[in-house]
Image (tube, rainbow, N blue to C red; front, side):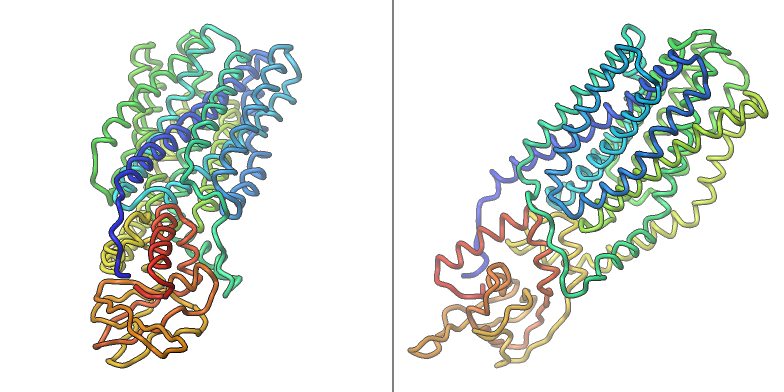
Length: 551
């Protein structure tokens, strides 16, 4: 059977709904994570009255979370991502319930920090699994918009989560905030559970070369390290803010924790403005410009606080900084989503989240030391200039990343264009298309050459790019031709999927250009949503017409 036309409207509509749920899950879970970061800081300050304890609360929960994130991110690649994300959300909800009880009874601050550390680590495992799943469930035609939405959503949560927390804390206690956060994790879990197209089994590993996965991961990590470093610098600024803004609110504005909440709310409004602007932009390849602008807007305005502005002017400063926070975060996360292959995305996002914890912890730890040694004004100046200088230092590598990524994608684009024309790959994600394209080996066959032979082991999928080929079945009555294939077409998938020998013989009728996709690469791709649905439909149609291994 030649490429079979099949209706795609119902599946596309379902996938669009599921993508929106996945985006909502990432946003709601992240809001919970970033909002209770403020809650635990305020709880520490209320219980101890010490900025040092605020720093300890930040560092104390992030250091153990580093270990949890590092180990858990491997599960995002080795276990079904849907199960990982769902389990992580439920676990965080339970931890929030326990933390609520601790806060209600004014329990030990050390216990509260420990519970927060546990939840911080597991929440980032959820985010790694959910972000990595985008490449598995989103078709190529919508991945760019989805990547922007997911990265912007996470960036908004970074700025808006603390702002929402401050509003809650203005009328309620940290215990109420922790309880609300537990509900956000349950809502996120319900949304993840509704995304049924997320693979329920772990992606297949390449067995031919046990070291291949590790080599691929290291190569990817070397390629994207400027984006990861950029995200870490932004996290460092956030860590400084946790302590600095508390001091600005209490010592300069004389507003106490209420002023702290207003400053965070100002940043949240700025984040929403930047998110709206990013949503309206469809142009890609602006990593260097946007990242530099973002880190500049996020860090440099800290200098304004040296002038001890009043509350309205301080809110304006925070509005600009919130916009910069979203811009730099969305640029980094979006660049990772559009570049990292699905097979390594869980570990890469896990590494990124781990370094976010490192950056935040470092910022929160050095700020009290700087305040004690040099005072508020000097600390503000250092906090404004050092991250900006670090962002400038990353410029050459960010530019190289942009050029390298564009060149690699451009080289594979002709192959991707052909693959996208085939029914088998019509709903495949961008990550799947580029992974398959990168594994292709060109082969030229002349008239009469046997491409595959019935009864031989199945070791590859073939794509007929140009020319024509005849499909034959061998039986006790002899060989008979059952089909003539014209490019573009594909064959060989039935033997790979069912683990059986070739079910037909394919012979070149004229000079043909074929693409050979190794079995490991094809089976890796076959586990992804989109391709798996088309593959099931195609195999069922072919077998229904008479078992053979050719289009």
